Length: 306
Image (cartoon, rainbow, N blue to C red; front, side, top):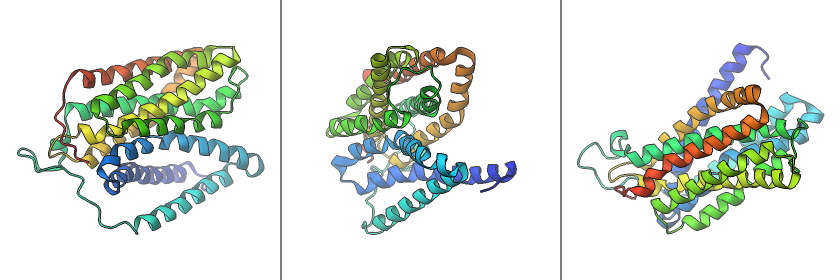
């Protein structure tokens, strides 16, 4: 409801601080309350929170904006968030004490510390997630503008495309149960590779069937990639490390990418057009896949900290 730039910026900073807390705390809580054999699948479900949010926001905007305008739309989004927060807090209050997420005491750095958690596998997954966020936030942020620009041959609405992502999340949830870090990394790499192949046709093809199929492929691949990266957390945290710290590092990398991703994507679109944006997304898919290659060629010390 603010109108001055300073007040709006202050509110956005406060909102961002709350977001940072939530994206670290929620997956850690989810992993804590899940049975050990379900922790990877539960984290895989969490991997879809960004695209599902974009899909809900697109549909809510299409319903509220034409009739009520931007301020009422933002108020409706805030009220929906508040309702879900109350429901979540109420359900969480009924859960007994959380089990210890951390592994056996480390002989070196203090158990659960940043130093005890930071190994090469965690760093690689965090970097890959940052690339994924740049790719996905750019894709979902500018998809509505692309579909409405007259340059698009995609036969689906932007919200519908985003709403397909949970199918990739659910498929990954089923596949990762009982798997290991190598398998999760393979799934994530396959998701990046599919994005690299499909991104340009989604934005560059004038054939409706090909463009629509490519956009759907990017959405599904994004669901697989994000879910597989989070599902790998129980397997990559070293003995004595903390899953919460690893999740926090991954979330921080994603948060940084959220800041720089949309302006970078907008710069590409301004300079190179929608075709260039397709190539930008394809290149991001290649970079993300390269981040995960070392996880397929080495054995990490797995403490199964969650």
